[in-house]
Image 1 (cartoon, rainbow, N blue to C red):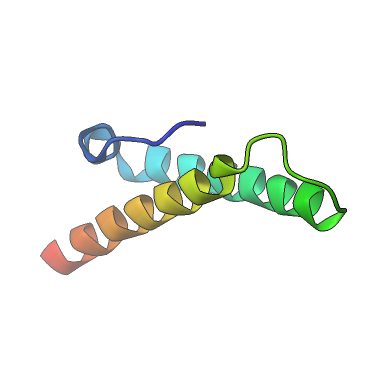
Image 2: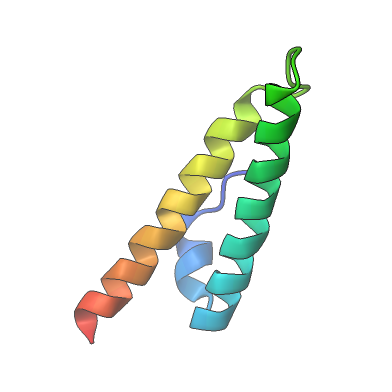
Length: 68
């Protein structure tokens, strides 16, 4: 999964954001598992992009919480 844009994430509703977050966390867990088994990961930048996507989603969720 590539980097998600903030505008794309802000257009999602709460349920879509939570589903996307679960999917990204699962992908991150899988990538970390592959990396921990040894060897170089096939796409070394993927871990960073997954972590950035998680941070972006959590930021949007906290912004929405602050508004309410």
